[in-house]
Image 1 (spheres, rainbow, N blue to C red):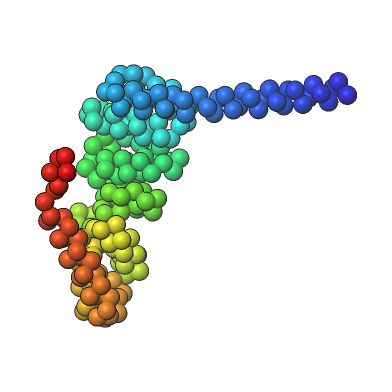
Image 2: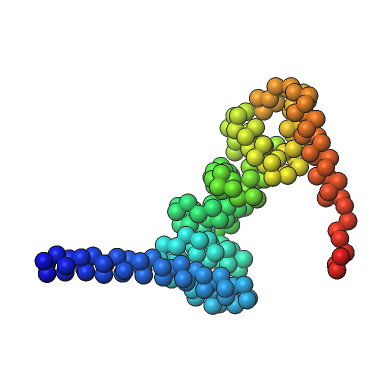
Length: 212
């Protein structure tokens, strides 16, 4: 009986050790966020380094972001890539930006698009717009393989987030038919045009004055 109790205590001890080890990088990350919010970049980096080395992907992305802003491109790329390998959305987006411009890594538009696409699939707003723009002939258009279904899905995803170029493209596609694998549909075209008009009107409206 004492042997079994000892094994149970050992198991509990091991579990507590693992739990503490897992919590430490997260605690460091939260301290880093607090420090960065108050403008203490040095303290933020001091907390981010052990969290990143402990395998905490969001900490890796935040450390990469700070290094990127300080023009330590190579180090930024290294941490962004490690975060991306762990599926971190900011890691994918940050690495994609460096690949797009060739900062810290060799310029590679195809790989940049792949990482922007992964970030977009995870709901990253800027990446969703970038992928949609690529299908509309934007900077990454040459990295795309023809795929009408993927184009339509990317445009619809961006349009639902009020990306005007995507909305306009869908309105035209439904009005004419054929582009992006879309059949002519006057009702759909009108709906997208109406959405675009409302969005433009909203954006053109003057901002409310302070205190009102």
